[in-house]
Image (cartoon, rainbow, N blue to C red; front, side):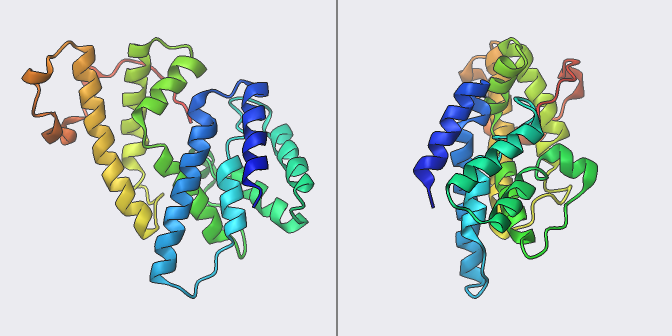
Amino acid sequence: MEFDKIYKFIIQRCYDLNIDESHAVKHSMDVLKYSQKILIEEYKSNPKKIYNEKIIYTASMLHDMCDNKYMDEKEGINDIKNFLDTLNYNENEIEIITKIISTMSYSKVKKNGFPNIPNYQDEYNIVRESDLLAGYDVERCIVYGMIGRDFDYIDSFYATKELYEKRMAKHIDDKLITFEYALKEAKKLDKENKERLIEIESMINNIPINENNNIKDKENEIINEEMYKNINNLYY
């Protein structure tokens, strides 16, 4: 695996295309991390199962380098194909990697369902679910709103809160997460992020911490439609 060359490509691409930090190197590393963790747990439960780790790790790292929020998607896919060719990936590897990253986004799955990728469906789902896990990140959503949508901090927070309720909080019920490790991690991350939304809203509303020390017990109160602002710009 050419990790150094792939990350140099990502760094340069983020610079050239103004890809902000919400979809840049740190997010790429987070998705890579979750992909590895899912694989570790899958191998524990089924040691004889074989996954193509090269495809999983490469797709995890490069998955946002064709994001249509920052570029023409088809041009982005072609750039990735040309780059992987310089690393001597074979034709099948390049085809599978680009198929994964061009069909794995939340919006595409909700619109088109899961693609059929014979012999590589598990690889697809590992990368896709890893991206969902990395998306359980309130601050990341706020950053994208501020940089990508030019929102003020408070407006971006309320847009994030609305997005969280409409999307991330429903990933498990919508059966978008299936691997045992991913399900366990998603439940933990969901709890932490609901708590974080309460913490930030308390801060915005100038509620002193010592008057709100029961925050950790309020995660189930996060749904409050009356407190949402009418912001329709959803991010993913």
